[in-house]
Image (cartoon, rainbow, N blue to C red; front, side, top):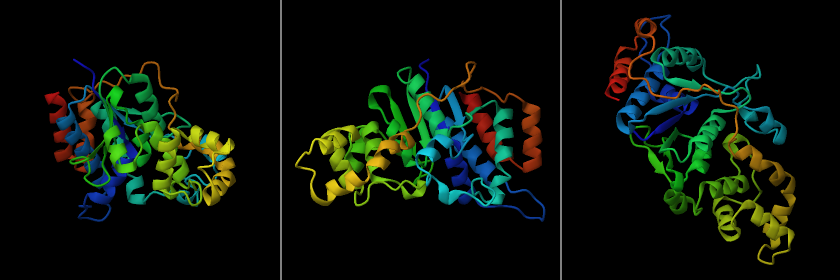
Length: 307
């Protein structure tokens, strides 16, 4: 059987579940479970539809890595809470450990790497396994569009609008039609120029998405844009030249912030195979009883059994 790898941007999905699934608590002191239930339903839907042989719930062991902050201090700075961590609603925060326990009981691989974001775990798995079979990345984050790679059958299932039931399939033709860039790497180069306020990345002042895409299309890469600028290309003139020159320090460091790491240190004994049955049925049963997870847990178990 040809391997088929499914990579989940876990935080993106459980945040979506938390805000999209109703809170059904009926009594005081009852723990919230909407993010857990929604996340399990997402996994069941994806396994039923995509039939992966391998699945990894990729994790933010560090949501704001030092190597990115040291390059651009504003990186995600607006999301830092008073205690220095990430601002997360408390009713979601208490559910994340439950998700961890449920994944362990099911036997679904959950993978984070100290000092790296889930995006980097995804990028490294794509880098190391591309060419061995289709890879689908499930996320609500456009940052991962840079991994789209038709030649190696890497697609992004973008959940921002239709969720996991009706995701936007992002491949190179989509990048070309939606953004005017031909490859995942070109998208990353365009994103450096454009910036991203949601991540605290300023971009180049006055260079929006359309202009950034035009520059990348004209010069091939961000490096090509900068080489043309340095060589005095007369087609880069006026305010555009001034803005690019003024952004030189930002452009020196931004690519390392925007691009996902291809070399996060993964465990040597990593097993990403999708189990056919829960690894620890007793632990799963206890979690189902404690948190009322019967319906979504049954869906996941049934999806695993079908595989």
